[in-house]
Length: 201
Image (cartoon, rainbow, N blue to C red; front, side, top):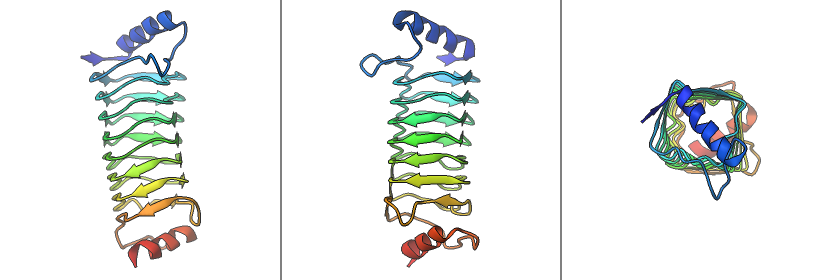
């Protein structure tokens, strides 16, 4: 089933009429499973606790939206943009991304495990207490990204290091057997140099 902006708004309005507000509760989420969301543009909306399991986001734009406690498991993001959005305690396990953009977003206690984010753009985003297990971050743009108090294990950062990223070293991140290529940029901040020595020795 293909859902465009008009259809999506109809679904949200129906849900809003039922619950007297946009959004859902953890016990009774709005389920939009295994759907194709195409060319959707939304701004200043709260999608907290929505269930998008197995859905496709194609050429969608979300600005200043809230995605707290959202289930994105096994979803696909094809050339979609999320700008100034919040993702708190969301589940992005096994998501696949094709040129998706998360610009100036905030992620807290979000699970990215087993995801494929190759060529994604996370510019100016912040990650706090997130889980990255077996994540493909090859060629990901990490310009001015800050990652704190997170677990990063068995991840592929090949060609991602050339964009300045702050891994909060010395800090509380836990870095375990991640893959970085050896041609680190010479203008990396000091904490990145320490990371280089740690991972490439």
